[in-house]
Amino acid sequence: MLPGGTLLHVNVAVIGAGVAGLACARELRAAGAQVRVFDKARGAGGRTATRRTDAGSFDHGCPALVRGSWLLELAPLGIEHAEFAGREVPVPSMSALCHVLREGLELTSHTRVESVVPGPAGVRLLAEHAVDLGTFDRVAVTAPAPQAAALLADGAPDLADQAGEVPYSSCWTALVAWDEPIPSADDWHREASPGAPVIWAVRESAKPGREPGERWTIQAGAVWTAAHLDAEPQAVAVDLVAALGTTLACGPVRPPDQLSAHRWLYARALEPLREACLFDPASGIGAGGDWCAPDPLPGDPGALQDLPGVPEALHSGRALARALLG
Ligand SMILES: Cc1cc2nc3c(=O)[nH]c(=O)nc-3n(C[C@H](O)[C@H](O)[C@H](O)COP(=O)(O)OP(=O)(O)OC[C@H]3O[C@@H](n4cnc5c(N)ncnc54)[C@H](O)[C@@H]3O)c2cc1C
Image 1 (cartoon, rainbow, N blue to C red):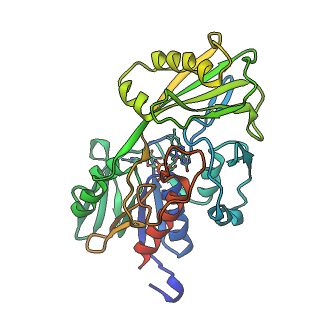
Image 2 (image 1 turned 45 degrees about the horizontal axis):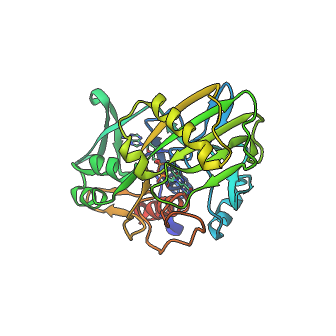
Image 3 (image 1 turned 30 degrees about the horizontal axis):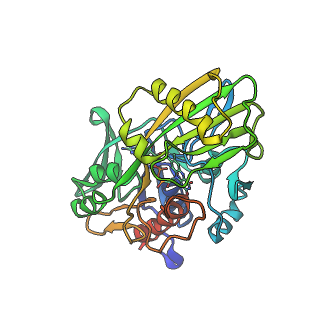
């Protein structure tokens, strides 16, 4: 390490291009490390996702961001955001957040890391069919905790044990569009009852900077999702549309013109570790994400409970970079 925290010629792999992974990678790169980011998905974003369809776009993961001083940390990046439903939404889409965070980073997408193997020359990453992704001085794992636990099992079993303790809830989300408006005066509804079939329903076009068109994203509650975990996506979407009319108190809504559903198996960390991140100096492997949240979570009025989310992922990613640099 050079004075001022500069780390030249250190080669770091970051697994995961969500908020935590990108925040981690940015800090590492700023300190002079050589950083490669790998993600199994098509691009950056993770659960801050936006799906583009013929009918327009849907923020089908995290729908909005809680307000707080943490947003000031994003200000230097120039991420545009605006008020919606007492929260903030990035403009023009939720995915804009990670599009900005990933600028200047080397991201290898469509690449699922299968194993993280420490050895005398460094930590080797292997993809499917044992494809060698390279050997690195340090590795940051930022997948959701259950997936992180599997990746950490060989190289850092103590960290794997800790990650393996974090339970997650799942969430079915329906993406629905009509050619004509449905008769709802409300643009969004958040449900406080944990057993409710629908906990969030949002008219996407009502969010600032979105395209016009009658598109709704409907999030199912954790209890309902657990009871329908292995159901067919089309059947789930039909059920959630049927529940929408009751949720919005606008009476039955007519069958939509476009309908699909996405299942988030690991949507929200229910009991995060009270540490900012995990790091094993012996192997050079660390881990973090929304499942590492050291501070009591800020009150989020209207939330079912104070679950960690994007702010915690951002802070954990940064803490992980500092641990790897240390
Ligand atoms: C439906 C829903 C609603 C939500 N609502 C809110 C909310 O209201 N407020 C809030 O703050 N948060 C909310 N969240 C949670 C928030 O989106 C997450 O806490 C945050 O985005 C987590 O960021 P992360 O970087 O820790 O993880 P992720 O975003 O999950 O990123 C992890 C990345 O790792 C990649 N990955 C995993 N395994 C591998 C592998 N083996 N190889 C390569 N890549 C891999 C994944 O593809 C993913 O891109 C919500 C999430 C969902 C799904």
